[in-house]
Image 1 (cartoon, rainbow, N blue to C red):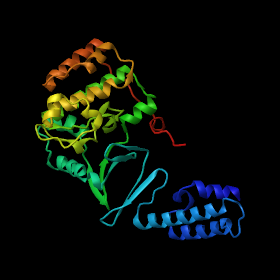
Image 2 (cartoon, rainbow, N blue to C red; image 1 turned 30 degrees about the vertical axis):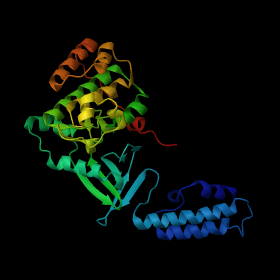
Image 3 (cartoon, rainbow, N blue to C red; image 1 turned 135 degrees about the horizontal axis):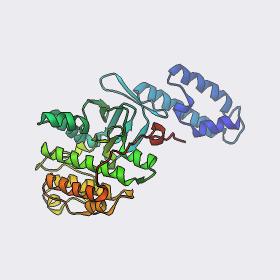
Image 4 (cartoon, rainbow, N blue to C red; image 1 turned 180 degrees about the horizontal axis):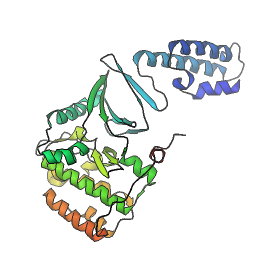
Length: 333
């Protein structure tokens, strides 16, 4: 009997009940017969019975409004009457939103207080048409979110992005696969891809204002970096900024900070901040690049990086990266 009391006192509603009204009511009656203080004289019985009732009420409410949460699963009853449900591998809370990622989908969730950022994300990708056919095939379709869907659920605003199975969060790769220390040769290609991305984004006339470790996603198979997050801060180059993260704000060039106008330098400085903040064994030439002042012209900055890469490792080599999913998404205890 003490085991039942402890279970009720420590579990969540989805651990006690299945997603069914009949199951909730049947199990509630069964447990109530065992833990009600009129029949159970254990000192914890009264508290357990009160908690059992709370769990039943939580379960019935979640069942009714479509917000049933269970370990590894999140669902929302959408305003259009359907239900969005994702079995996720990884979850992270960011500055103004949170995200859940599965094998093939990435979901960002904004509370009502941050609706303007959700709407800005929608605006950016509703209006952006890649100006170069070759760039679209080689860069745009990899770097930029493509298959995007938007949903609302009460005061929640949801962005759903389709992805391929080999794409993982850069944060999870660094923390769980490399255990916090990025091998220099891998950091080299990560830097190259990010520099390429920034040059392309600037060529298209945009500034992201939100490139950091949590908004970058890695294709291990192709050594590609997709920037899926942070676009809620993006504007056209030269337009007023609508926001950024506190970390990026700290490295924004003084003129940009004073004018509060989007500028390519914000993206390059935020990327350098991210890269120099990582624990790595990369050669000094790379470290010097991360610490260097940035050129006004992205092409000049790319040329600086190219020289640093040659000084660091000489001829380019493709270094395989073949992590297993359970090495990037360890099971929760």
